[in-house]
Length: 224
Ligand code: DX5
Ligand code: ZN
Image 1: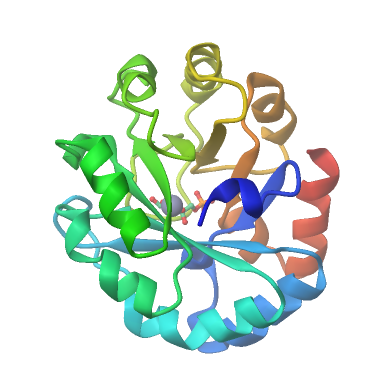
Image 2 (image 1 turned 180 degrees about the horizontal axis):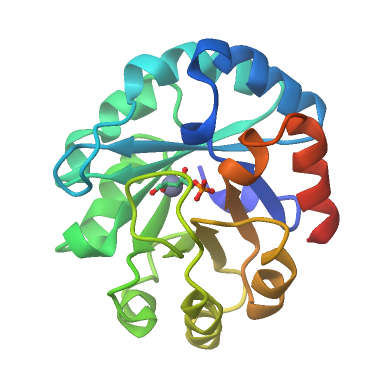
C-alpha cells in the first residue's frame, strides 16, 4: 500500500489524539461526513515520548468505521523499536506507519519490513534533527513528516521554524514525495505551510478543540 493511492490533493488529517475518547466513533463519523478520509493515530510508548498513548486495541475498533467510508488510518509511531509494532498495527487495521528518524538505524530495512505487512510508510523527524538528514534517507518512504512541536502531546504551540524547515525539505526531496506537518497546525499557519511545500496537514486541537468539529475541519480544508 502507498500514500499515493490515498492522497486526493492537499489533505487535512484529523489527529485523533485530541478527540473525546468517550465519543471516538461518533466524532470519526462526523468528520467522515464532513469529507475527512485520512485520520492520524498517534502511538506513544512512554520512552521515545513521555506519554503512553493508544495502540492496536483502540485501532481495531475504529478501523472498520474508517474503512467502510473508504478512509485510511495513518499511524504515527512515537516509539523506540517501531518494528515491534508493525504486525499488530496492520492486523488492527492500520494502513500506514510513520516511524522516527531518531530511532531508525536502517530506514530502508524498516520500510521494507512495514511494506511486508501491507503498510504504507513515512519517516518523521523532530525539531532537533536537520531536514537534510531526513531527506538523505527518504528514498524508500512515501512521506516525510516534519514535526512542528516536540512530539508527545496534543495542544502545544506551533514552532515557526517549521516553515523554513519544510522549505529546506521540499528543496531536497523529489517531486511527488509527500511532506506532512504535525503539531500546532491550525487556521493561522495552514496557508503558509502549504506555500512552504507541505501537502499533508495533521490537525488535532484546531479541530477537536472547537465546538463544531465538522465546521473546523472544513475551515482548514478551505485554507489549503
Ligand atoms: C503529538 C502528536 C500530534 C498531536 C497534534 O506529538 O504527534 O499528532 O496530536 O496535536 P495538535 O494539532 O493539537 O498539536
Ligand atoms: Zn502525530
